[in-house]
Image: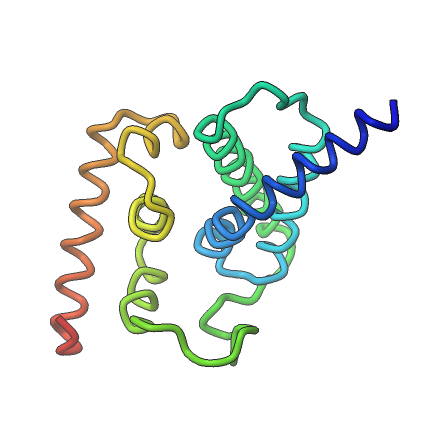
Length: 165
């Protein structure tokens, strides 16, 4: 029994090392709130720990984690209606020190509507293929491609306004 627990902990630790950043970035992109993103991160990996994921390959595990994180983000969004929250724009500085490269671009991405922001983040920040994004979001692949195209169009127009394109 102790060996099973240790093996489960090792799998969890490996999954957190491999996909933890992706889960956190997705939650932060979606929620735009550091504390809520941290809560989603913790709850996502708690659910993985409770799940029997012994036979899962890497792609399945990543897709499962991102899907759970998205569902938890929706739950947080529902809770926001009853309590206040602080957006990323109101946060003076995100922990980690210096300003990231392409910060103007990512600031513009954060202003996109949620449905465009999510597919843009999954595709460009996490490197997911459109088919994988479709499976994670449970929408048709064509819808993912349209949302990516519209997000790029919106960003192109916005960045041209600021002479960043």
